[in-house]
Image (cartoon, rainbow over all chains, first blue to last red; front, side):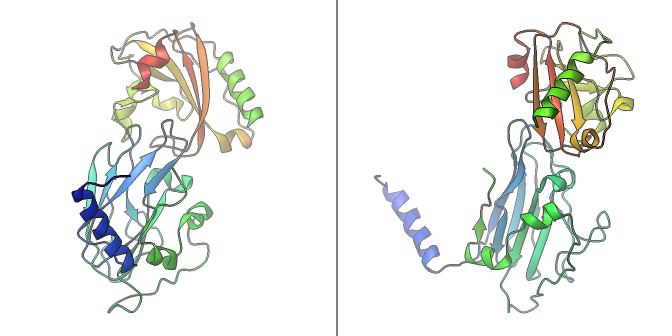
Length: 173
Length: 133
């Protein structure tokens, strides 16, 4: 493989980030909402993401045949269990049609679990880690067992795994 | 899954009542699916869908191509309901001419959230291609 100068510079920058790993994503980060051609599978890509507090996270529907939501787990939204930090502001994108997007800027350190309303039972969930354990205001997630459907619980990657690999793709193509 | 396929194929072949709504839009009580739930007007693989809301979730959904020609009749059959013993009998079909049938799994979407099977009856040999995109 031959790299152009620009690619070398970009690759070098990437390596620098990796060497200092696990650096948290910052600026604006995109989470895609995707689906297979006939809707057999639906997923968030990446499945897990670690970002610095104040990072803009944009959800984009890249599924031409379906609509999706990015909805955090919170009692104020459809009376679901809380799975974001207590001090955080809950968010719900509403239904996003193909190529629509929605952005959120989580500021409170901690773990934010979210799902797609029509596809939670298909395991379409994701996990956002903001900051790191020990950051001022960090709240360790402590949820009762069985608070969500099994298919959702099984899909969440571990927080430690996301912190090791800040953009975690998950197992869906 | 094999039993499901056989069951769905039987279900499709058993559809006897023809609606003969060859051009979009079909009359009420049929309504565009995109006007009932948050979905695009044209769904790749299925076309522009119309359904009588009283027949949800199974349908029939009438699938029209970009020129408004009836190209497919689609049934959406929740797997859990089949497993629970529910049957979907005597479903109508958009047109009695059927040149092919596709049956496949769908994880769910607005309107039919539960995992289900799509049973797609194509009404002419080119219908599948016209509905693809």
